[in-house]
Image 1 (cartoon, rainbow, N blue to C red):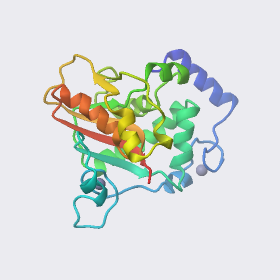
Image 2: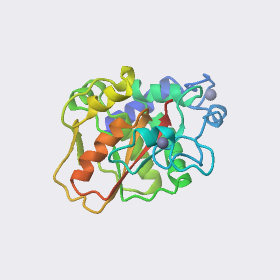
Image 3: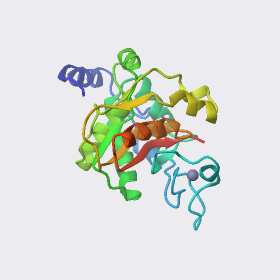
Image 4: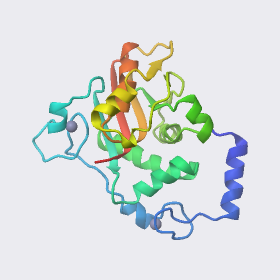
Length: 235
Ligand SMILES: [Zn+2]
Ligand SMILES: [Zn+2]
């Protein structure tokens, strides 16, 4: 949650340094309409499990047949990560603390939620470890989840799920190492989630192992179904 001080200082910053498009530098907005239109949206048909774009009449992709998600019911992503303006936008959101950008990007998540006809009880951002949270000052997934929840009128739970230990950045790791890195890294507090359907929110999904580890912790607590929705899907 942002404090009033953070909000007011953001307002002042916008006055002093008027926004310009993160991707093309055009004046007056953080992501101009032209760049928004260039975002490579993912649309159905997709793999029923991991959400990778597929040809019609195939239900599950090869990757999911060989290496299925353990706990998640499925992942969906709003857009492709590579070669389009979503990549600089996510980078900006992650490293420049931009709530205005989170709010623009949350519209893409809300549209994807409708496009894939997801129906859940509660949104949960993928948590950061406390040390990383202190260092960055915010959790970008939490910014996305709260802006999206606001848009769709869905509750957002930022407390139930937490990290039990710090993990290495997934960026440089292979599929198997990613899985090992996040195994047992999440836990769920003692709240009653039994029978609920949860939607995990994150910025980028690569193999889905982080989301899957979160889903494992939630299902241990009796959560009925766990889906993941990310802004982007990396190849
Ligand atoms: Zn632009
Ligand atoms: Zn798949």
